[in-house]
Length: 355
Image (cartoon, rainbow, N blue to C red):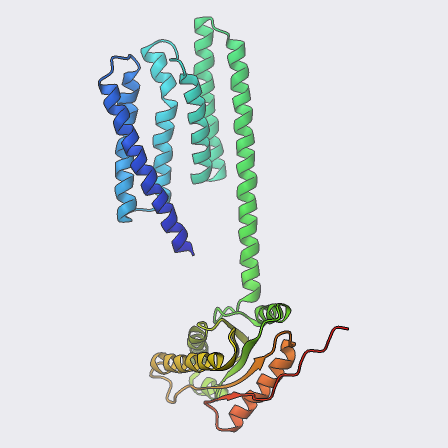
């Protein structure tokens, strides 16, 4: 999932860089052929943006760098390009060109958003406030020197400062909310995940079974137990036992749902019915046995096998009853010589009516 999201970001960046390269190239050519006194600003900033877009396009296409570093470099380029218009005009023309102040405000807001997206909260807040202070100082100082309506300009700058403060507060809240959601999801995952195998633990398994029961869905429930696991632990140590459990989990995770129910006992849920479910279970156990055989290591002097008891569960049947039947089927598999699957053939009792 994470890889898919990263690929989507890269596709967006490729399109954005291509569009930016095309636009800035056109603006550069236009400025080079123009006699407008403002053209120097475009002759400086547009080639810079075009160079960044070309480099970013190549970097993203070749996957030659981290996107976070590229985003921070974009912040620098965008900030320079959008906030340098006013200083250029004041130095070259002695006055802001029409639309320059609006461009400066838009650029300041863009830089603020990019800053909060790519930097830490404290660094981004400092960065935005410094930019704002420089912008407000330049524009108010110009109005004072030229005898313009500096009070109106000051009011505009105060309103802009208020907007930036609200933007900072919004990002503080949003980032805090996202972090809290992430922490909550992480805690939920820890609560239902077995730390050794990465499978669902008993609590997670009970939730999965409760959901199947509530949704009135039929399924195949199997209980798998490692044969002679105590002997393996005693003979090879707990590290070898843990290694076997992890290998076992790696094989069983191909099931629709796999649960470490406790110790060396696992639950397998196959959301199919009839012979197809039984075939899927046999293939899964065969695959897991092969994984144990090939990756168990030379220290294991005898093959590690599984005994499995399985039952078909009718829609709405309490999973506790089905689990008891699967346990009895497991005992039957053990009694018959281990290393086998025993399918309980007795029909499941119909769930009692609610009324």
